[in-house]
Length: 495
Image 1 (cartoon, rainbow, N blue to C red):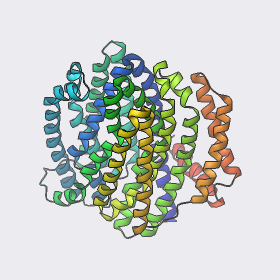
Image 2 (image 1 turned 90 degrees about the vertical axis):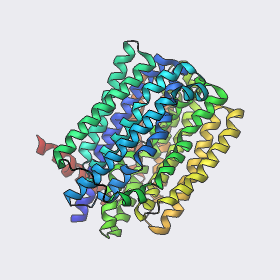
Image 3 (image 1 turned 45 degrees about the vertical axis):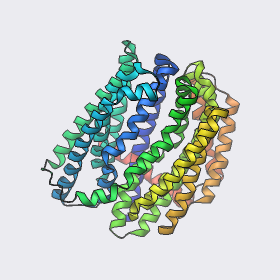
Image 4 (image 1 turned 120 degrees about the horizontal axis):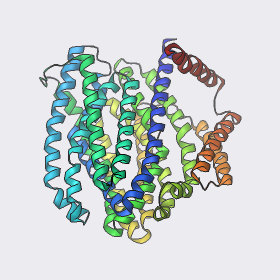
């Protein structure tokens, strides 16, 4: 009974984050046409490179405290230890954030001139330097809520950031601020949410002067992950710089728009990972390996239940989406979008299995896997981009993520084996095929028809999944009880 209740809570929290993430994706879809049409391919490409550069620096600033706070404080009940460790981590990240933001500011001229090949963008780089500090602090502050499984607060804060940023972006662009307005929207929204996070945390646990008494344990676990984050940047983002080098900023803008849309196929990995890692950390520390296996099995199965149809749907909708959401210049990226969805699928497998490596504390294994993947990625990018353009960059990503997915699976199963639900994956793929056929027959050409075809696809997919018996009777009963007692029951209590 207690175990079932735990799975129900887990499921409810995942639903909360999925709802938030769906809203975030919708906001992103709203933002993309506004930003791309206002900035054009060249300035949009510059914005993507600025964000990419900040994403490279941020992991070095946080020193993996975002993950280590969850790993070591998920099962902690001593409020004094929680205060001590959390505020020690916050102060270190604050100091490193100031240093890195200042360095980024001072190097802005060099980055704009020699990386973007446009000295006029140095002002934009200087303006965006503060985002390094703000983004890094936000990562650590959100970790506080994840480690306590306060997923509702976590979801609202994330949603609040995206709503505020999109709203301010629309306002600033409409006022004619251009690229500077997009950057300022990101700065103001992130600063506001940081302040809200700090207020809530102080209200929950108060404040304690940091003494750094336990910080060595956190650094020992987290520092090996710092190069991992940098190497992940090479895999996830360096292709934009290589595309920019060979093909220019306009091609980078087209590639980035298609790659971002294709990446939405992995939208479910964030909700599952956000809820899963603190729960399995707690179960593992308490010696409940059986529960760990069950959580992994359910998480992988239901992650793929959303990701596989997302890949199929986005692949069929590649051209219509780019047609209705961007300008004509971006439609040439439709093939990139298709390949990006398959890369997103492989990334989901990697992200799931790497949690096993985090649990056992062998974070250095991730560095080795990522190092090999990064070499593959750069090698294929340098070979393919000059010959087949932006499609070559996405093919390189697919090969890289496929390697990571397979290799992380092999390593993870040495330490913790769990059911991969292969029969369900096959049934999900079959149902997704039916769904893709329906969307293809609809052939949407307007934004309304795109949304209607997505709705028709969802109905077709889940209908087909029921027909091929993708769920057992026990699972159907669980879902029914979960919806009736978990979601509906909770809403009724609130009312």
